[in-house]
Image 1 (cartoon, rainbow, N blue to C red):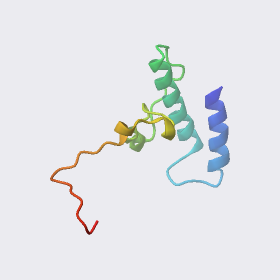
Image 2 (image 1 turned 180 degrees about the horizontal axis):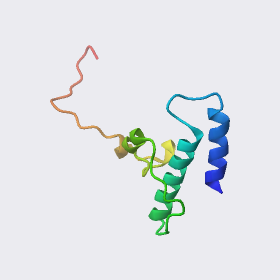
Image 3 (image 1 turned 90 degrees about the horizontal axis):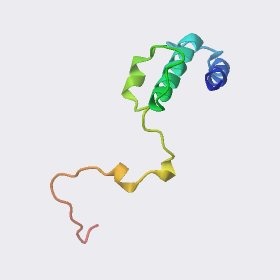
Length: 89
């Protein structure tokens, strides 16, 4: 049922047309994501759809979290060299 709701939203959004993105492709993508979520829950896929948007594989759809629930360590970035504060700072 969620895929149908998301598809209806995509139809509203894409009615004016978006280059390279059709409602059918969007539905396939939504079905693909739904199948991935079902697999994470140990359930069988419902749709068997492939991802029509290769660029979305670069997105980590596995890690969905509320910004305010993230841990500070999730933003940790390694710094090479030395960092110091002087009087000009």
